[in-house]
Length: 163
Image (cartoon, rainbow, N blue to C red; front, side, top):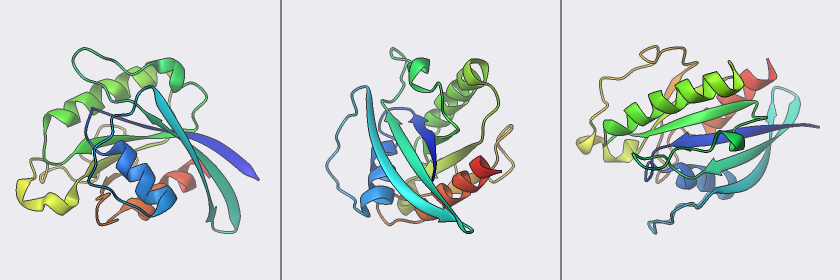
């Protein structure tokens, strides 16, 4: 069976851990837990007829004083950039991370996830659509709370990794 490392990257508080937990355990919790370093989970899925195990590296968020450690990203077959749809500045963090990942590991598949779609009335990123992101394979709206777009996002990245 094919096993591939996938990193989940973004600013603090965008919902990275909640997205992984929703995908792996089909759960959501309102309790906020800060990731320290990295948390690793696994999930096996099928793409077409091919089974693939995603080794999900949920990496602590980046802010003005703390940058993501690129050593965690080495060896990744793909990654998610997660922005909080209610905080436009988190998209700037994604741009910064994308540039660093591209310089460190080269061109690998990634998707931009606009999380917190369940908070539509508070959105600041409503104008960002698929194709609006440089070099992005896709822009997908997600909600770790409701599950919207979560399965689709992981399936899509797995397909792109297997190509």
